Image (cartoon, rainbow, N blue to C red; front, side, top):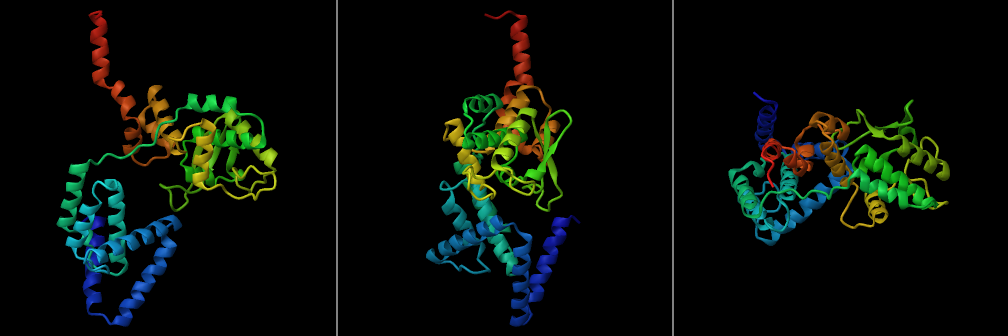
Length: 329
């Protein structure tokens, strides 16, 4: 029996047990679950969970459904249908996760596993499409062009450091914002490694490493000297001379990149996508790309590079070879 089914069976047994338990025992267990959730989930995950469950409960009440667990599967199915075409299917799935967690927290059966809900989600995907919106790629040559035109003012030196770290490391915005000076590990050849203490795919902090080139290292070291940063200070901080030495927010990282690049359609994630494009263009294999971007599955880098991969596929190779052999004109 798989781990997934063992967990589900255990949860069902707990639901049956709680049904005959006293109100005091039930409330005590629910409080314990909530306390453990506060410690187990990331703060942003908890914020999203609370916001989603609050808006979902409002929708259930306004549409005449029970808004507290156990919420009937037909109510959840109607909720999914109502969201179709308004938000992306991936966002709907996130809302279903929150509703499911709400029921787990109250030790109630999960209505999101009901076939009605599964079918309603399938219907939404079929009607509106299930495509995932991808960040606009920002490739290395574009970043280097922007770095070259930036001046040497304090803010420009900080912005150069941001651009180098984001484009060299392929790090997510939250990872870029979290770096401390001590996370910069110099290498004999002039480049550096950046210690990623915690990430989306490493929530328990085992730690991973990202790359920073030699000119990127020089730019970051210049910034730390100008800003007077110590090893325990954030690597990227506010540019004001008397500003607090606090970590920049991940949205600030993206705003800096928008301003430096003179574009509004990009974000910090754009350098991550652009890095994959550059790698596929230069013949890097998928496994090395996964290592560079610290992906645990090939799905995302393959999705990021699907346009590049199509032009380098067997179909493209065969067409170009045969057309070349026949000297088509």
